[in-house]
Length: 60
Image: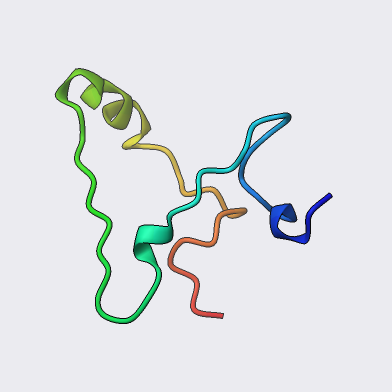
């Protein structure tokens, strides 16, 4: 196994999607938007507590 695949988010036999366009000097921004057809998914999660296993918002 290649050392570059350790901890990759890809599961099973799938290759991880790499983002070389974010590499290099200067500011890099990866923008996203919600598809209105899938807005109901976000609505169903609105009242749920955050998963403590995720690192969003952690500073340490």
